[in-house]
Length: 161
Image (cartoon, rainbow, N blue to C red; front, side, top):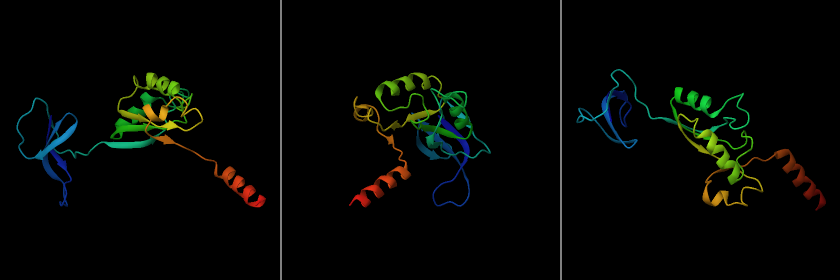
């Protein structure tokens, strides 16, 4: 695919530059002028061409609380704003993504609804490591602590000597 006549910001330029962009397998492989013809050409005359945005922290409430928002409405809004990839937090799903069963349950539901690329964070609990969620399927985990409780615990330990 070639995006022709797009206005882009390039290194060492102060102003937008009118160029053609060649994309193969979702990767920009060439930027220049008067690129050779391609099967698919998009004329971006007068338009600014920017890369897609990645939002690494979304809460789409799916499955579980879909009256508020689901993966379809959340990813539609993301796409409308130029976001091409979202990474969903584990805690707003019901059940939360803290084990393989819940991960695959969520994937079965959201994969059909997503209109942009997505990733899923895994939540940390005692269940997270029993079924090798971390070794086989989940590369990132979100942990939350209640600082008040931690400080209380530390203070108690210090007082006890």
